[in-house]
Image (cartoon, rainbow, N blue to C red; front, top):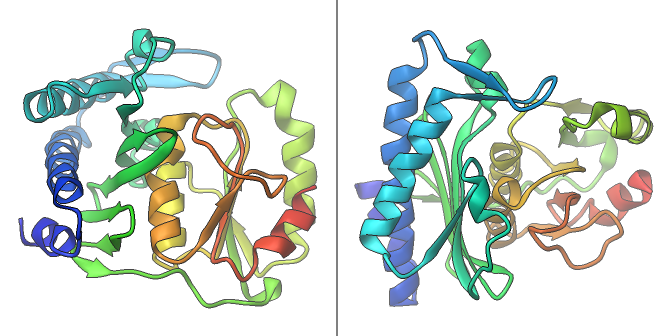
Length: 272
């Protein structure tokens, strides 16, 4: 628990400290379950031509919801796999949960995936946790409390030239509708940066921006559970998050640009 305590100790807001501990506890519990099932055969259900769900997604989500309900019974939980929670009337404060961001990676044995949990209040994240179980890396942040990786403070990279930057992106499941735009953006960005990575888990990509492994990340067609926790991580690590027009971001917007701040305007111009 030391890494949770080390991170939470820097929260000046006692309530945020308690909520961060609760979110970390739920994320670690789900992560242990996911790691145990990683090498086992998977029961796969298709939600579309290429979008899939495994039994581990469902089990991890149940673990998280049970943990959050036990510790914060009065806070609503919006979870990715629990479709009924998506369109429910939400209170001003609620948890946003992705039990396994990067399910396709998990199903194929590609070890880049994470649990993502955020507490959102009045449209803004107060607590964010992203846990990568195969790497045992726990990223967490609280509003005005900084961003942390396994109990150590993290900051975005200092890169200020596009040609020296490593940029992350992702591809939508709605290939037929989005492919022309995705490829146009990729071609433009790739020509101006050192390289581009597409690893397949937006929450973890955002955590990588927060700790300086990526200099920026952009994607279209995302959901609140993909971005809420990572958004807070990036901003608390000194980075910037907007929509693709440079305006104020919301986790209920489908497109995001996160960067180390120094490259933000240049990336926005490339993505228009």
